[in-house]
Image 1 (spheres, rainbow, N blue to C red):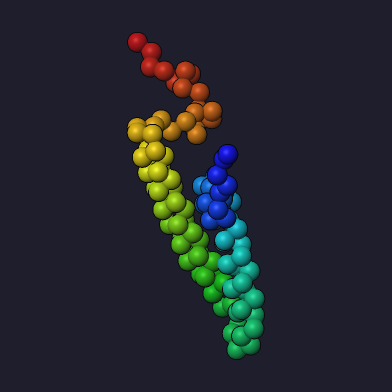
Image 2: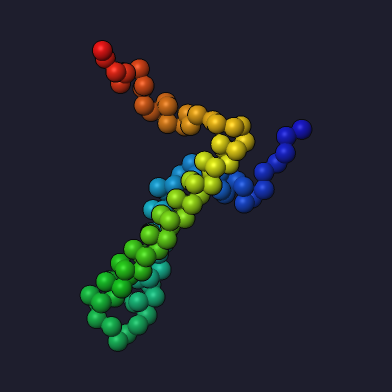
Amino acid sequence: MAESKTKLESLREWVVDHKLRTVGCLWLSGITGSIAYNWSQPTMKTSVKIIHARLHAQALTLAALAGAAVVEFYDRKARAGAGGEQKDDRYSKFLPIETYSHKD
């Protein structure tokens, strides 16, 4: 009988498959939350509120990109350790190798 995945394993697998979507969602939620917070500050000008929201979202995006890089690193390490030296064929369906062969 197959082992069921834990919620954390399922989430990690989804993040590995959808890295850019994850970073985009974090950016959107970050800028939305930052705008909501900054709008509650009545002493700031509107332009300053928007600049602060953009800076907060940019910092969150950089953190999310770093997190995605860490997830990718450990995912590749886990795949290589599972079966020895494993060919990464996730991208092979997008890149037809035969059309880019060297001609003599």
